[in-house]
Length: 133
Image (cartoon, rainbow, N blue to C red; front, side, top):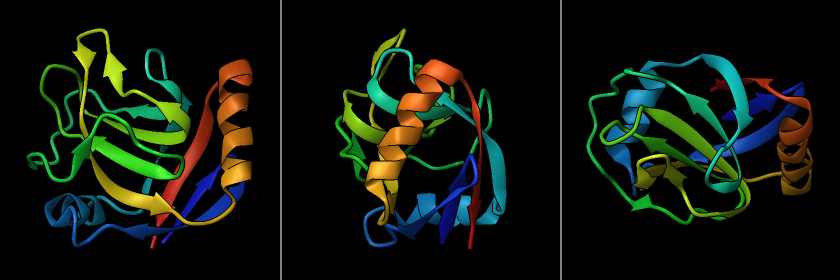
């Protein structure tokens, strides 16, 4: 799989063993294109707000503290559905408090570039993102 953010391509893998239902639901939505913005409450991360979108999955391998390169899906609940991409230190949260998202993808290349893009979303704003198999 590849994830392209603002023209930079990253290699990534689905975490099939840890989050099989989330991976399958997201595969059905691919090619997935959107925009990524900097997180508000969570620290060093980017997110894709998805509103009421329902991937029809529960919690799998959920964490509030992803490490750089981990991609989480928050499947809806006390906050809106969203995807979070950690590029540094993250405590996943929203205005409703701490959240736990399903770790379903891991970015496996160019984490230094991922950090640069993450910081640029803070200072420059949204960037296009695409997930492709």
